[in-house]
Image (cartoon, rainbow, N blue to C red):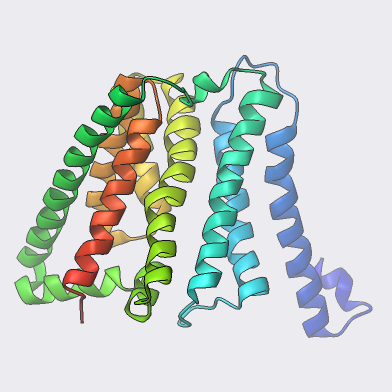
Length: 279
């Protein structure tokens, strides 16, 4: 494409044409995989991988084009909120399309069950306690392993530095107004857990569960969950959280307890930051 474009265009314009064409193909191909007809009785890994690829390419592009989010630049709370809403609304909309339109399955097959809320709340509270404990264990084990390699102070500093590299941690020191804190709490405690549980537990774990036994499916889904967060130092805590959420869904048959536990875990991390912010 670049060589063909060079016949009529300057080098920079030809390069932009080739990059744009590749990007368009990268967005259209996964979208096609999501909507193409299938004779299978239910969704599989092709839809999960297609949706992953689509968001991996679309969200950074959308952030750069609309909100000027660039590496090294602290995004505004509004930009972060908009991108978070778009991504998680996309997760939910794509899942509902796959389940309800493409395969004509009931929402219960995705773990979206209504009713029995007192029981769901107790299940969510138990899962939340396990999630917070797992996060503590994972953090401690990570620091201990790094300490063996580089010393305790260097290990603690590395964990703190890696935490503040994420977009949400970069804006936390700039968010202090009550209204902004409420928006942030809703994002990390409600929006993100709802979207991620639908995608990682409902779609991804659901597809894996039909290919392997439940324990291996839970492990693979947890590894996928951790890898998607792109936080190497936080990999073990996120894997443990993914395992707890996977087994919560496996044993309750509902995404609601996992959403509650996921939200509580995120809010606890937010509270911990404001109690003792890293340097």
